[in-house]
Amino acid sequence: MAARVAQRLGPRAAGLLGQARVGPASAGCGGAGSARRAGLGLPGCAGRRGLSGPAPRAPARRAWGSSFGFSPRTGVAQRPSRRGSSAAEAPATKAEDDSFFQWFLLLIPVTAFGLGTWQVQRRKWKLKLIKELEARVMAEPIPLPADPLELKSLEYRPVRVRGHFDHAKELYMMPRTMVDPAREAQEAGRLSSSAESGAYVVTPFHCTDLGVTILVNRGFVPKKKVNPETRQKGQIAGEVDLVGIVRLTESRKPFVPENNPERNLWHYRDLEAMAKIAGAEPVFIDADFQSTVPGGPVGGQTRVTLRNEHMQYILTWYGLCAATAYLWVKKFRHRMPGVRS
Image 1: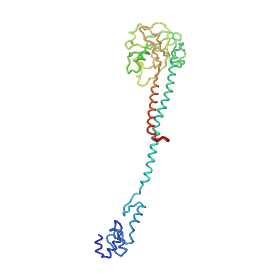
Image 2 (image 1 turned 45 degrees about the vertical axis):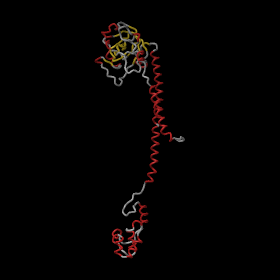
Image 3 (image 1 turned 90 degrees about the horizontal axis):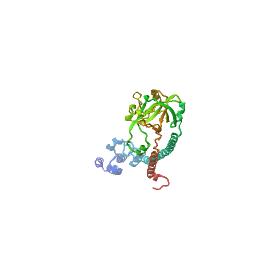
Image 4 (image 1 turned 90 degrees about the vertical axis):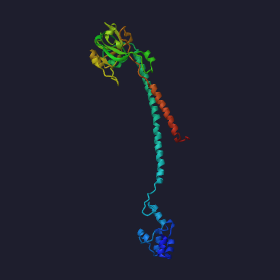
């Protein structure tokens, strides 16, 4: 293009064009400014800049554009650079997130340790309660109190009564298995049991001394002996002296069926409902083993052993605490002050 302009304007213009070349833009409008200062007009740049005023030099234009965020090229905007600030903020944010994550994970072993300690206290309480119940069951029998309100503080306490049974109004708590401590000790930990299913026979008992009728759990009979016609030999007649363990009413536990008074099936001790059906007071005792007669229910069906699995929970929580604490130290030890990785 410079050659064609030189041919049109002559030798003098060609010399001026050579002086006006700057870097790689030697054929551009930077040289045209020098030609205009010499009184020459170039049609190619007149439409791009106009004819008034000298054209700025390329270095000055490049410096002005970098200050205000524009490209050295005319009309092309350049976004201000934020690489420096972003690079400085990223490590600080990552370090803050890592620190929060580190101390949050420490909550796992701390919580497990607290739960293990709580189970230690629960086990102490349960062992004390079991010991108290065993001592109460082995205490000397006392006469049955005339005031039913006194019985609320006498659960598992042996009492003595005298009277006779009303076998025509028997109630049946079922399904039940016979309480046998020796067999239960042998089968501890097994998934299945060889115990025979049956029922507890609850019979109204009229107390001669007190003039009231109470409910007595005479004991366990197998399922085939639930019908009283199959155990006539064991149906005691006349007055007898009886020792039994005081039991209170109980609420229905989860997954336990509702009682069915119409079919005479009782799944839990609802003393109010049972007493209403039998025409007795809401007083309930478990007859002891000495009350057993040949052909009749097996007495002594009071289970005084409470569920005590706290040692398993203690080992579980303390084991989890030790494992998670070890993993935490192994991962974050290099970040602890004064510890070399």
